Image (tube, rainbow, N blue to C red; front, side):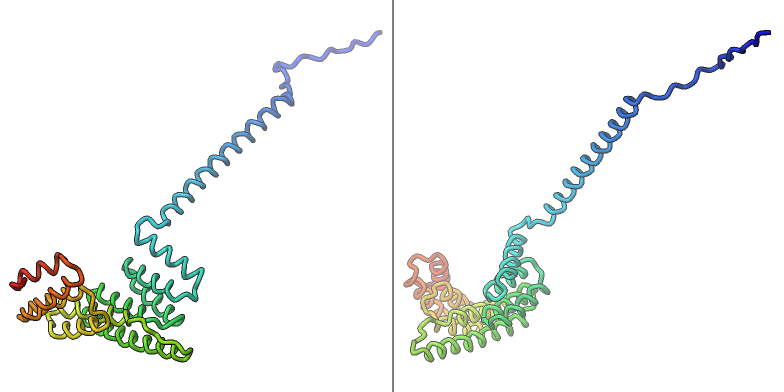
Length: 250
């Protein structure tokens, strides 16, 4: 007898065909492209955010730019005293008084200039501490005298003559005089104006300020003399003419 070979019975469901290699490669490529796009987008967003942060930190106002410039100058040339003077005033203008005091102290260690004492006094004035500011301007006067004498001696040691005027002393005296006048201390203010005018008697604006104080104190003759003196240096000076008209002068 011959053997009968049974034929395989076909399954009810067709066998799943394996995915083509091309389909798998395309899917991987698409996934890689999507991930790359996401990375690029995140990088762009990060760049924009960082740029925004840097822009927000950048100085926007004149005061902020002055601070940034002065800070850079002291970082690049820490042994230049004037850079510390500029930084002190920049901080004062920005109402950063603690930083201003620190900058002044650092600058004095570089060179003990009268300008730092003036900055210290101005800082106190700006904070409304008038009595302390007046005392600080007096300290600035003293330092100006000492510094001037040091320069005179240094020049003499080299066989030279120091002929420049003590402008730092005049400035300190003028600022002190203005504060004293505001505080109603006219007589004391006149003493300071006299110191400044002794340094440079040709300061027409200071002559007018002195005349205003004299007029307020009732010294009309003295006020007229000062207004006329100012007009000799600056003819038709509006402030002097106005003051002179008030005290009945010509």
